[in-house]
Length: 102
Image 1: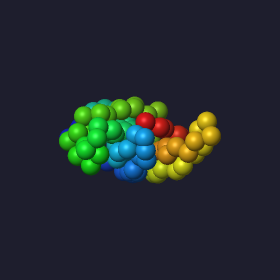
Image 2: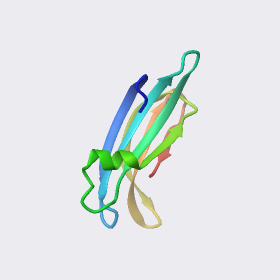
Image 3: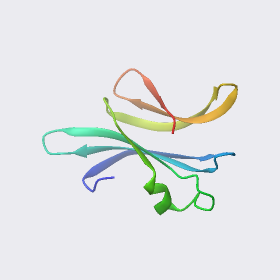
Image 4: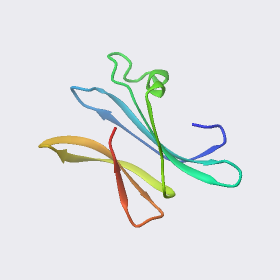
């Protein structure tokens, strides 16, 4: 996360077996002078023994630039191919709820 960024929301959940680990989602706005750019970063690490090592988790980051201003980030369980899966849901200044999975 850039030093000049403003964090908007944070959410985490534990990934169950077989891919155990902590998943962290952070939305932020990076101000680059004339334009503010919103982002969603999703961090996760599935190496055995590193589930709660924040340095290790930070190495595997999915960085997504958003086309809307994020408000609230939360997670929910959904059915994918007859299996439960935890995903991030993100609301913002548009009329949609956006779904993201790592």
